[in-house]
Length: 94
Image 1 (cartoon, rainbow, N blue to C red):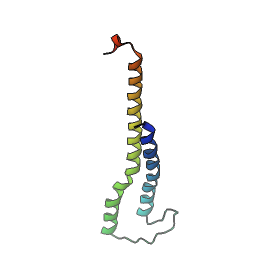
Image 2: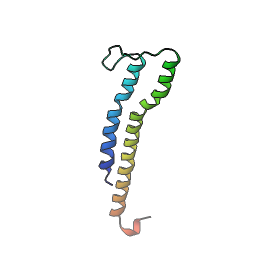
Image 3: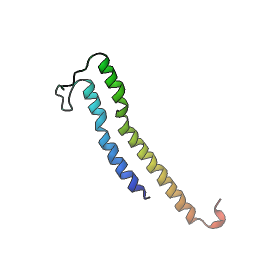
Image 4: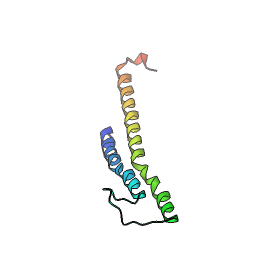
Protein backbone atom coordinates (compact mmCIF):
# COMPACT_ATOMS: atom_id res chain seq x y z
CA UNK A 1 0.00 0.00 0.00
CA UNK A 2 1.42 3.41 -0.89
CA UNK A 3 2.16 5.58 2.14
CA UNK A 4 -0.04 8.53 1.05
CA UNK A 5 -3.04 6.19 0.76
CA UNK A 6 -2.87 5.67 4.53
CA UNK A 7 -1.38 8.97 5.71
CA UNK A 8 -3.71 11.41 3.93
CA UNK A 9 -7.04 9.99 5.22
CA UNK A 10 -5.60 9.48 8.71
CA UNK A 11 -4.25 13.02 8.76
CA UNK A 12 -7.56 14.48 7.62
CA UNK A 13 -9.38 12.40 10.22
CA UNK A 14 -7.05 13.63 12.95
CA UNK A 15 -7.65 17.23 11.93
CA UNK A 16 -11.42 16.74 12.01
CA UNK A 17 -11.22 15.04 15.40
CA UNK A 18 -9.22 17.95 16.82
CA UNK A 19 -12.49 19.88 17.06
CA UNK A 20 -13.69 17.42 19.68
CA UNK A 21 -11.35 18.53 22.52
CA UNK A 22 -12.50 22.12 21.99
CA UNK A 23 -16.13 21.06 22.15
CA UNK A 24 -15.43 19.08 25.34
CA UNK A 25 -13.89 22.12 27.04
CA UNK A 26 -16.79 24.31 26.02
CA UNK A 27 -19.30 21.65 27.12
CA UNK A 28 -17.57 21.32 30.48
CA UNK A 29 -18.11 25.03 31.04
CA UNK A 30 -21.76 24.74 30.03
CA UNK A 31 -21.29 26.58 26.73
CA UNK A 32 -21.98 25.82 23.08
CA UNK A 33 -19.16 25.98 20.54
CA UNK A 34 -19.96 29.62 19.76
CA UNK A 35 -19.85 30.59 23.45
CA UNK A 36 -23.59 30.81 24.09
CA UNK A 37 -24.98 29.03 27.17
CA UNK A 38 -26.09 25.51 26.34
CA UNK A 39 -29.31 23.81 27.32
CA UNK A 40 -27.37 20.93 28.93
CA UNK A 41 -27.80 21.21 32.67
CA UNK A 42 -25.84 18.85 34.86
CA UNK A 43 -25.15 19.12 38.59
CA UNK A 44 -23.01 17.24 41.06
CA UNK A 45 -22.43 13.60 40.18
CA UNK A 46 -23.89 14.06 36.69
CA UNK A 47 -21.14 16.52 35.81
CA UNK A 48 -18.48 14.17 37.16
CA UNK A 49 -19.85 11.20 35.20
CA UNK A 50 -20.16 13.30 32.03
CA UNK A 51 -16.54 14.46 32.23
CA UNK A 52 -15.10 11.07 33.24
CA UNK A 53 -16.90 9.27 30.42
CA UNK A 54 -16.30 11.76 27.61
CA UNK A 55 -12.89 13.33 28.26
CA UNK A 56 -10.94 10.24 27.08
CA UNK A 57 -12.63 10.67 23.69
CA UNK A 58 -10.97 14.07 23.43
CA UNK A 59 -7.60 12.32 23.13
CA UNK A 60 -8.64 10.45 19.98
CA UNK A 61 -7.76 13.23 17.51
CA UNK A 62 -4.33 14.14 18.93
CA UNK A 63 -3.37 10.47 19.34
CA UNK A 64 -4.43 9.68 15.77
CA UNK A 65 -2.30 12.61 14.61
CA UNK A 66 0.74 11.32 16.52
CA UNK A 67 0.27 7.80 15.18
CA UNK A 68 -0.06 9.10 11.64
CA UNK A 69 3.18 11.08 11.89
CA UNK A 70 5.04 8.10 13.38
CA UNK A 71 3.68 5.77 10.67
CA UNK A 72 4.83 8.18 7.97
CA UNK A 73 8.28 8.54 9.53
CA UNK A 74 8.71 4.76 9.90
CA UNK A 75 7.61 4.03 6.33
CA UNK A 76 9.76 6.85 4.91
CA UNK A 77 12.79 5.50 6.79
CA UNK A 78 12.12 1.99 5.48
CA UNK A 79 11.89 3.33 1.93
CA UNK A 80 15.19 5.22 2.30
CA UNK A 81 17.03 2.19 3.67
CA UNK A 82 15.62 -0.03 0.88
CA UNK A 83 16.70 2.50 -1.74
CA UNK A 84 20.19 2.92 -0.30
CA UNK A 85 20.62 -0.85 0.10
CA UNK A 86 19.58 -1.41 -3.52
CA UNK A 87 22.19 1.09 -4.74
CA UNK A 88 25.17 -0.62 -3.03
CA UNK A 89 27.11 -3.43 -4.71
CA UNK A 90 26.22 -6.91 -3.48
CA UNK A 91 29.57 -7.50 -1.75
CA UNK A 92 28.97 -4.49 0.56
CA UNK A 93 25.55 -5.60 1.77
CA UNK A 94 25.41 -7.06 5.24
